[in-house]
Length: 127
Image (cartoon, rainbow, N blue to C red; front, side, top):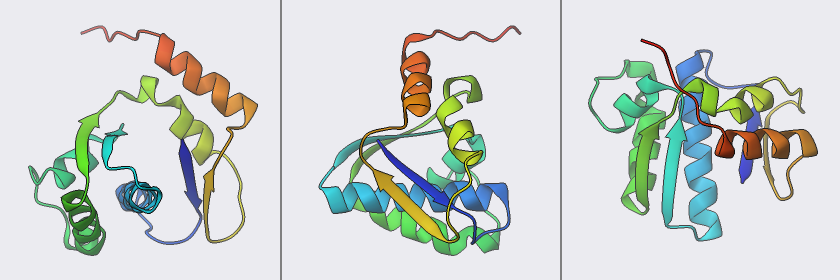
């Protein structure tokens, strides 16, 4: 698992989500991963990436970079419920150095426990 954190850049939540997705795709390409699953709890991000919704103009550059990266990768893009993506919430709450940090390697023990629980827990939503 690679993690990404930044405290600069886009000012919108969707902009930050797409920036993180773009960086993740760049890391996958760099590390030679070609068959990947891109899962996000942002339905808007999924719809923009799959070109099902027309994005606001300020997202055009990052989406262009994402679409370009996807051309070189075999990627499944899926939406996951927030309850199954607690690792993202944990990462978002961490304070890091100014700028962009990409970490690849052994996970923090708390983050490892969260990802293991998310993989083994079945969540259901009442309608």
